[in-house]
Image (cartoon, rainbow, N blue to C red; front, side, top):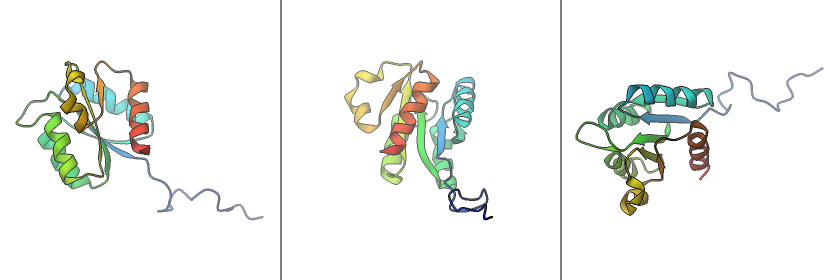
Length: 136
């Protein structure tokens, strides 16, 4: 009896579908850890950064990031909007989703750069938005 029907790839098969890799960029460590933990539990590969500069280094080093979920307000010389613009110029295949507790939703320029999910967000809403963006 042939158990290897070929319907499902073996676990070590390189053709097996890998889960999407996300980069969570958030300077509030508790928010970053809880968000990343939820997304890992939802089946994503998650890497984390506390600043835009760190995110830029990771995007270049990783090479497999499919979506960046970034807070807008962060310390350093670049905020989340600047990071989204940099990604759009240097890595246009990477999707970006921005978040903030501030009233950025009224700023049309921000919404032209990347989709926006206001804080506080529910984790299931975040997961739904991410999955929708990855299918686009």
